[in-house]
Image (tube, rainbow, N blue to C red; front, side, top):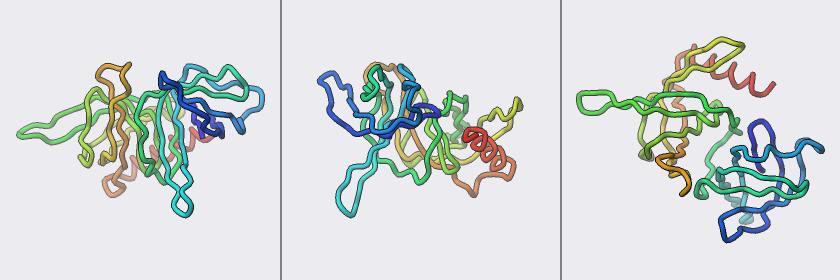
Length: 198
């Protein structure tokens, strides 16, 4: 499945070109007439059938789809294991900050949330995050013209550089620790996700 913002297309992998472009055959579009958003960021969610134990992976990149039955994806990340138990929503970047305790001080890392679900999020940063490290993530979600605060403990599950065309840009994903979330943050997240689904 190719996910481009609020759109989803079922597809089948065909080939990888020498310049790193992936070509997919479109099996089913979410709309029969509207073209895929060419030039937009996308996620490709893939299942490799291995009999009783299918493996799930995903990559991120930019999509081009001038042909009605083909989609071309310029890859920005390596192939990564998809451990997510819920579908995440691709969103326009939402500014956030990560905080972690260092010796006698608190270090802050600027980030942008690029996809999100009830259980976790994908973020962009200008530095690599250590897998297994824990940060406090803080942001504000715009819900019906109102900014609502959200914070949680964020456990990093993967972190990788965004391809060779990006300088100091890294993609990371992780899970929210539910026990760390206050009722106000849970409500903000639930309402934000509800608006994305409408």
